[in-house]
Length: 379
Image (cartoon, rainbow, N blue to C red; front, top):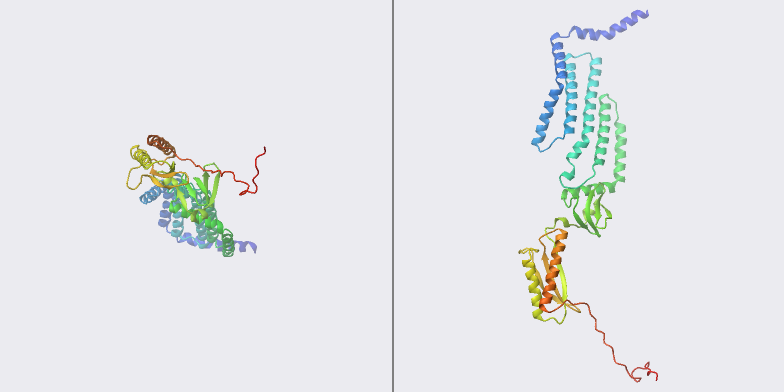
C-alpha cells in the first residue's frame, strides 16, 4: 500500500512540470537560453557601455564620477544584466508557480542585495562629492555622515529583503520610529548645532584658515568645522571650540577678507606747540602718506592728518590711512616707516611729542593763628 501512495504522490508533484515541458515551445526555449548565454558572456562590455553612458550623462550635469564609483557601478551593472535576463527568461518560459515563484524570489533577492551592496559601498565616495570643503573651503569631518549613511542603507536592505519574502516587519518599524522620535527629542542640541553649521557653510561666512573674531572675545584661525562645533585656534595656540549655534547667531568679523589694513593713530604734541608747528607736522605726515607708496590714495580711502582736540597734557593729532597690503608683516613695516616720517616731521618743526604731566603746587607754611596744628621748628 505504501509504494503506490509514494508513486502517486511523486506523480502528483511532477505532473505540473511534465505538463509544462509538454507545452514548451522549442523556439522560445532556444531563444531564451541563447539570450541568457549571450548576456552572461557579454556582461562586461555591456556593463562598461552602460557605465560610460551614465558618466556622460552625469558629466553633462557637471558631476564627475570617481574611479571608485565607476568600479562599483560596473559591478552592479553586471549583476543587474544577469539577474534581469534570468527574470525575463523565467517570465518567457512560465515555469510552474512553485518553482517559478521561488526562482523569481531568489533573483529579486539577489538584485535587491546587489543594489544595496553597491549603495553601501558608494556612500563614502558620494559624500566626498558633496564635501563642503570643495565648495566653501570649510574643512568638515564627514566620517559621521558615512557611518550614518551606511547604517541607513543596511536597515533599508534588511527591510527590502524581508519584504521580498513576505515577512511582515511593520511592528518592528513602528518601534524603530518611536525610538527615532525619542532620540530626536534627546538630541535637540545636536540637531540645532548641525543645522547652524550647515547655515554657516551655506552663507560662506568663513573658510578653513580664515582669521575671524567672534563676539565674546574668541579670535583666531578657523582650523576645523565639525558637526557640533567649530574649532578656532587662538593666536596663543589655545584652541577654542565654539558651538555652531552660538557662532551662527553671533557677529563674526572675517578679518582675512579685508582688502587693506587701517592705521588709526592718535598722537599728542606738547601744549606749547605753535599753530605753525602743528600745521607743518600735519603737512609733512600727510605728504608721507601720499607719496611713500605704502598707503592707498583714492577717494574711497581717506588720508587724514589733523588736530582733533586737547587733552590734559597734549594737543591730539589724528592720523588715518589704509595700507596697500593686508598682510601683517608688510603692514608693520609700513607703520615703522610712518613712525620715522613722524619723528622727522617733529624734528623739522622744532616740537616734540607730549607725555603725561601733572603740576603740583606746594602751599607756603601757615602761622599758628591760621593752622592750629602748626608748631615752630625746634631750636
